[in-house]
Image 1 (tube, helix red, strand yellow):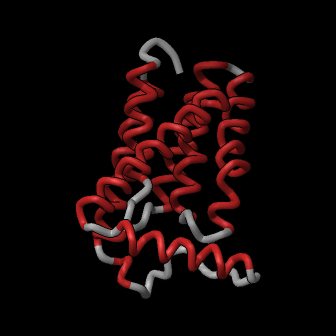
Image 2: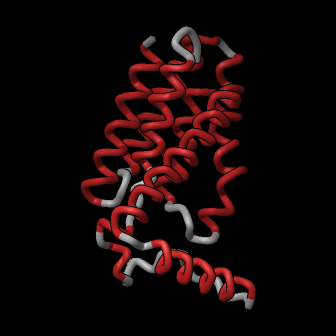
Length: 174
């Protein structure tokens, strides 16, 4: 129960900080990861170490390329790795899928709310074209108007929603 509560509180704090200043503090992620590792080992003995290592590695392996293409921030990737420390390897795969779905729903809602479909498609296809010709530029150039709320998806929010859904669906275990 303590593992679940701290995971929920940590992801809620990360979502709030991400919305406030578009950053997730490294100190928050570090403390949460250390706490998660301690609780995993305390709850599961030495097998908890394997859960910690695999749970943290899976987001890096699956989403590292999104960071390399500047489509995902470093804080978001570190947040997912810390969540993996709490959930272990099987849980983090579920959280990753739920976060992608939650993020897509939030993005679609913003696209519909602000009428951005045509603009986003043009931007996306221009980006793909640039990548095809070997240019490595961030997907979202923060000097561009995306800094405004209508352009931004703070990914810690979908991660928090994913954790909430994951915990609700897995009431008896983590």
